Every structure is written in structure tokens, then in C-alpha cells.
Length: 115
Length: 117
Image 1 (cartoon, rainbow over the protein chains, first blue to last red):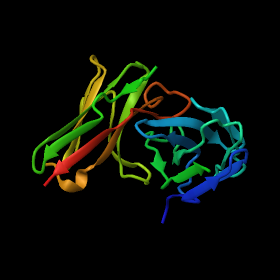
Image 2 (cartoon, one colour; image 1 turned 180 degrees about the vertical axis):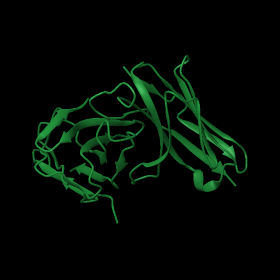
Image 3 (tube, rainbow over the protein chains, first blue to last red; image 1 turned 90 degrees about the vertical axis):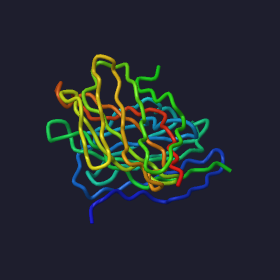
Image 4 (cartoon, chains in turn orange, purple; image 1 turned 135 degrees about the vertical axis):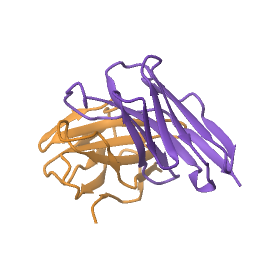
């Protein structure tokens, strides 16, 4: 059953700590994305990756880092430099340009709360 | 600067009537538009899409209309059902027709649709 799995669903972090959110997909998609959703806001792009070992900053990359060592995995680290990390984080994947339509599929999200 | 705008934060309709959700965009490079439906604490699910070479796409109760000259699209749901109550996000991408280098999506802020029984 193909899809995107995010873990954990809920995560609590103390101020000053780094935390890593997991995202795995078995859709064989080349591209993966991290978005952040805040109340009353749309989804804002943090980072995206078109291919293994390559990634690009999105609109709000400050305070975040990513890696793409495997096609299936795109973990997001929220560092202590992120001033307002409490949010709902969504991972998505899609095919690459030239392969078809740009329809992204999303995971179920991780709710991160700073305590 | 918001490139994709959903100016109505909420919409309330009666069951069986039509729901019309609107979306405007400013970036002329966008060539593919999508609607997603989202429930609280869940990821968005893809609903329907349209490319810039079309002006209408229909899928069951859902129809998306695109007016390129006005940079405006709308989602029509007929008839509306209580299960349609959710937040609807409009999203746009460049690169499908223009041969861009990525498919990243730009989202609006969403419209909360409430369908009353």
C-alpha cells in the first residue's frame, strides 16, 4: 500500500533542543517537500529535494536543515535557531518534471510543540 | 507577497446547494492548479486539478474553472454534502507546460467550508 509516512505524529521539544522529523515514502517519487502550517496560514515551503543528495531552500528555510541520502527518505531537523518552531509539519512527494502532472501527495503530519 | 490568494476564510452553505470556493493568483508562470481538502490534524488530500491550457475540469460533484485572463480559478461542489466540510486549499505550480525545473506548490491560506444539514 503506497504512501507517505511521517513520524512521530506528536512531538514535544524543549527550548534549545534540536529535533528531527521523519518522512518516508514508497511511491518511488523523485521529489520530496517539507511544508509548515500555522493557524490561519496556508502551507509554506521549508525545503524541497528533486533528487538524492540534492535539496533546495524554500520560502522559510531559516532554522531548519534536511538531508536526502535515500530516495525514500527526507528527514527534517528543526534546530534551536528556529525562533517559532511550534507548528504542524507536512511532508509531501511528487514525480519530477517531465514525468507527468505535479500532484503532490502528503503524509499525515507531525505536530511539534515547544514546551 | 502572496502569489496565491483565497480571500474568503470561511464559507457556509446548506446541504444540497452549490459551494463555490474562489482563488486568485498573481504569478503568470503558474501553469497548473490544484485543490486540496484538509481535515484538522491530517495531511491534505488531492481533490482536483486543471492545467492552464484548459478552462474547465470536472470530476463527479467537483468542477474547477480557470479564467487565465483574470488569473482566477474556482471550485464548484454540487450538491454539497456535510462530509464536504473541511478546509480547502488552492495551490499552483509552474513547470508543467513551460518545462520548469521543479513542481513545488504555492498554496493559498485556505477556505473553511461548512455544509449544514
